[in-house]
Structure formats: structure tokens, C-alpha cells
Image (cartoon, rainbow, N blue to C red):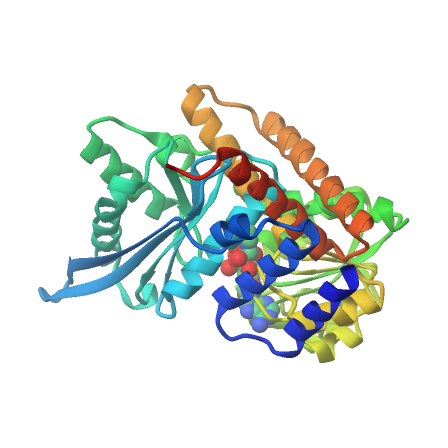
Length: 429
Ligand code: NAD
């Protein structure tokens, strides 16, 4: 049985599908095979529950009216209210939003938090828009999706080119329409509006907790272990700052302006300060500039791709020396490269597990809002550690049981829990 699906997986890796939704369906098919899913349940999981497309007329600064298109896809809510970010990008498509909403469903399930999955997007170029135009677009979108969101229905969050200010506008729009201030309708809010302490560093911190467990499993001593980070932004720099508190040494880092390495190691806090001051990691005192390929293939124990999707390609994967790859970024490894890493016994902590710290603390933010009771950063971090550590072991156990890599293990756990909920709910009417 396992062999049959290995073959299917190989076929998948040989033909990379440009359509992200087809990729998501193929991943679902692989997990369904291991789980021996009932065909009806598989069909339910292969279709979003609701897809909303909205037209958004916005008065531009020029005085003209422009109509934008926005989407909210609610994939599955069998385990709890829909949850997922909102992305502003010229390249947004309905199929992309559908795929992202499916991945959110599996991610929340792997993290074992009581949420389903959703995603939203607006086709727009935020870099070409003023703050006023962005605010009017956001409020119009908030009003358009207001009937289907809510603290017990669907809780959006930030994603690409949206931030805590965007969330504040949606919160205000929804609360004005409802006539009651409703902080729990959205997460990733500013602290002044009920955001959670610890949310800003949650993704990097969660990725460190999964790396700590991976180090134990792979007998890597973190004290003195060497690591490199591609993409020294929010997720990557926090990952570096927190991992070094375990005694690990940052040997290389990069951003969109270039890659650097140091033979003696770099202090992550000083590198963060340097990037804040100069706008890049490049030029950090004591470092030398290298190519991106050299960075990814450095002689380190741990490598974290924390920039964009598709940065680890087959050619790069062949030369990766790290024993552990912690995917802070979403989709950094192509399917072909994944196969090579697995063959070379590189232990990959897949994105839906490694970067789930963000959504776990979003869940904690939502609970605090509903309870009107706020926790200290230590309390938040400790709950994050407990949840993500337990998720790591659930995935690791599944990967050992089915003799598959951690990515397939994560899909088996994520899809398995949602399938169980769907099956138990039954089919209405
Ligand atoms: P960010 O914008 O703060 O950081 C991205 C960094 O990558 C920047 O420093 C940028 O200069 C760098 N970069 C861009 N192109 C690069 C290239 N070609 N080579 C090297 N570096 C490059 O974004 P972020 O929030 O840290 O997100 C990074 C990744 O983590 C994304 O894939 C995102 O989806 C994922 N992620 C983030 C969160 C979160 O809470 N921030 C949660 C889940 C997943």
C-alpha cells in the first residue's frame, strides 16, 4: 500500500503543477491513501465549504471610482470556526486562495487548535496605493464579508501586505455594523485593541521549539550547533535570536539584498540592530558576502528557509549539508527538492508544523478576547511551547508509523483529524 503511494508521490514530484489548488488536492490524495479515507469524506475534504467573491468600489484619491475584486474562501469548519489570513497582492487568484484555505485547515488541525481553515485576498497593488485608499478598500472589504465572519464563524488575520493596522480597520468596520465592539472577530490586532503579547515573535519562537525537539530526535546538541537563516525578516530574525539562547551559533544569514557568513559566528541581536539601521544584513562587521546558494549549502547543523516559497530547488537540495531544515517560510521546498532531501536523510520540519506558532498564538489571542482576560508574555510563550511540542511529536509518531517523511506525516495528522470530525458529524440533512 505504502509503495503505491510512494509511486504517486514520485509522479507528483516529476510534474510540478502550476495551479496551487491542484497541488493541494494532490497532497490531500496522498494523505487520503495512507488514511484509507472513505470516498465520500475525501470528496467533502476536496471542496471548500463556501467561496465568496465580492466587488469592491473604492473612491480613489484622484476622485475616480475603481472596482476591486476580493475573495474569502471558507474551506472547512468541522473542528471549529474558520481561520486564516487576508492577502493584498496583484497576483491573487481564486485558486490560490482556495489552496491557502485548505493548507490553513490542515495547519490548524496539526496544531490541534479548535479552528477550521479559511483564507482571503484582494487583487490590488498595495505599494501603489495611499493609506487613505487602503483604508477605504479594507473597510469596504470588511463590510462585504461581515455577514460571513464573526468570533464564532470566521476569524481573519494578517497575511502578505496586510498588518495590524489593516486588522484594526476590519475590527472597527465589523463592530460598527454589529453595534458592539467585537475584538474576537479578528487576530493579529494591535495590543491596544486586544492583541496578544508574544504574537510578534510567535512564528520564530514556535519554529525554535520544533527545532529543539528535532535536535533531540536527531541527536544534535544545540549547544554549539551551527545554523543559517535565509530571509532575516520577522520569522527568520526571531528564529535566530531565540535559537541562539539555546547555545546555537548563527553562521550565515540573508535578505533580499544579499547573503553573508562569518567563520566565528554572529550575534543575532547585533545583526537585527544592524539591519534596522542599514536596511540589510549585508555589511555586518566581521562578515563576508557570499552567494545565496553558498548560504543554503553552508556547513551547518540547522538551516531555516524563512523568505519566500520555492527557494530550495533540486540543484540546491543536492548540496544541503544541514541535518535539520526548519521551514519558517510557507512552501520553501519544491516537491523534487523535498524528495532529494528525504533521500539524503535531511530531517525537514515542514512549514505547516514549523511555522504554526503564528496561528497558535492567534488562537490564544482569540481565547483572551472571548474571556476578556489577558495573559503575561511568559504565560503565552509557555502555552505555545506546550502546544507546538505536542504537535511535533504527533507528526513524528505518524511519520515513524507510516515510514514517511515529516511532511507526509503532518498531512496524515492534519487531514486525519479533520476527516474524523467530518465523518462523526455526518451529512446534513
Ligand atoms: P518578512 O517580510 O518580515 O521577511 C521576509 C524576509 O525575506 C525579508 O528580510 C526579505 O528581505 C527576505 N527576502 C526576500 N526575498 C529574499 C531572497 N530572494 N533571498 C533572501 N531573502 C529574501 O516576512 P515574514 O513575516 O518573516 O515571512 C517570511 C515567511 O514566513 C513567509 O513565507 C511567510 O508566509 C512565512 N510565515 C510568516 C508568519 C509570520 O507570523 N510572520 C507566519 C507563518 C508563515
